Image 1: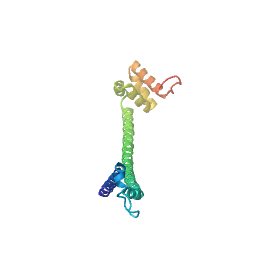
Image 2: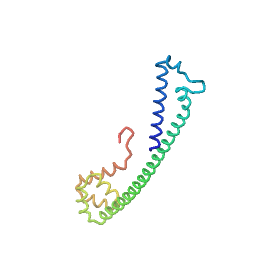
Image 3: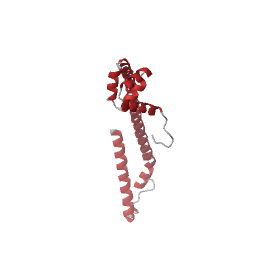
Image 4: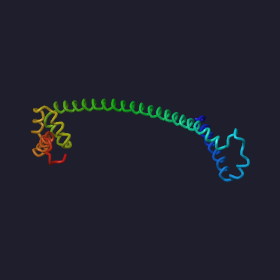
Length: 174
């Protein structure tokens, strides 16, 4: 970091020095002509032109180093995100397994319940949950439970179960 700062500061000072030399030449050309140095000495503008390639190379090298550092940071972030994604996928898999087991356990409980008690509980459940549960029960257990319910509620749940298996018509929006 210090090296970059020194390099940037040095290039900035170099630009200021070169700019000042050119500004003096253009501001007072008459004064610059009599004080012209011998042909072997270089003018301040010549110095700036002489090191322009080196300054450009230094700037490109600094930009390359910066890009490499940024690339490493991006790679590290990608690795952290991939690790986090894998962690979430594992958590989701465990959660889905738990829900499937819980779902199986609830179905087993309702299968072993007395039909009149199961009918009372399903009558108080939301339609979709009750219909989903009835559809997972055996045909014999579901029919016995539906026969114990009020006729309107049993018909409503049966309609919900049949609607869930139907494909929507092309003109219907799902």
